[in-house]
Image 1 (cartoon, rainbow, N blue to C red):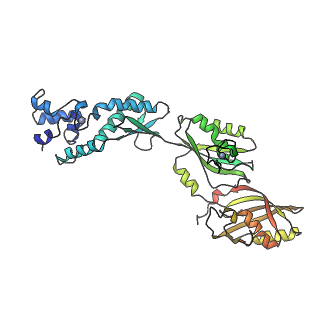
Image 2 (spheres, rainbow, N blue to C red):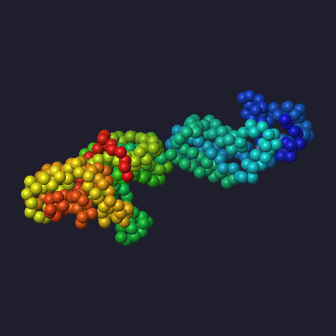
Length: 414
Ligand SMILES: [Zn+2]
Ligand SMILES: [Zn+2]
């Protein structure tokens, strides 16, 4: 099994590189001990000429090019890269020069058994153990807080820190803020005279108001806001609020007191934006949220410019209830949505009041229903509509989301 001249072709080797090629030799041995065992089996005496030709110090090994000797150096690089972050688990990866890897494969193929361990695997394992011994944090393959990829050719550590995901519900009472940050069109977020050098089209958003204390407490590099759908800028979000997940990227501090930070959000943004039900969630919640659709109930103030009686308004509202309407994409959104005719179920339309040409309605409809157009008819693009049924000009003046019916989820059908 062991042919001396084949080993000699690749010499000098460090004991690890020799032992690593023979994964089956010995039980419970590490690669260095395994290397010694191989020398033993070949009856190569310590200090003999042959031993000196075959075996080198780790730093002079021609197979790993000295990488095994650098394990403590790599450990220190990793520990240094971790120093700004509070993490409780990690994983090590290595990038190794292609020539070294192909030479190792060539060497291991000489012995045909394919039971050897890869150089990268030894590096990852031994650096990992070494980091664990120094820092006492857990090495974990599955979903660790930090992944350190060491580029062994350049002594650089590329660090990936797992984002924090915080789910909650938000209410919006301020009808001037968009849900997410909205970069200025003119400068694309860089900052210019038009946007007062803020880079933003709107000074605040639900995202910026909620995220602010979280970004400070976590010292993250960036925040992302994933809402379960969104309301119009000028619509309030009332009732139990709308689910969202706030993502904090590269957080330095992972140990956040969500209740305390949530309270700060709510005190600082009284009468504007509130956050509730905050909890940590896994990344998978973002996709789940994006794929969840539900009926919604709206409160709308409608101006009706033709003289009609409350009876005919109520009759029109009743005829719209439990009706499938056909909505062609409104012109106001046609620049970002395909021009299609979509059937939508209107569950109910209730008239709350009708005074001086202003009606207050509560409308429950299937997800994706354009409520303004359901009321106005959108020049015949929504059929039927409240306007067509009562034969009067109708316009939504104020629109609020009262409730998302998450308990009674419907099948996603678009
Ligand atoms: Zn070596
Ligand atoms: Zn700008």
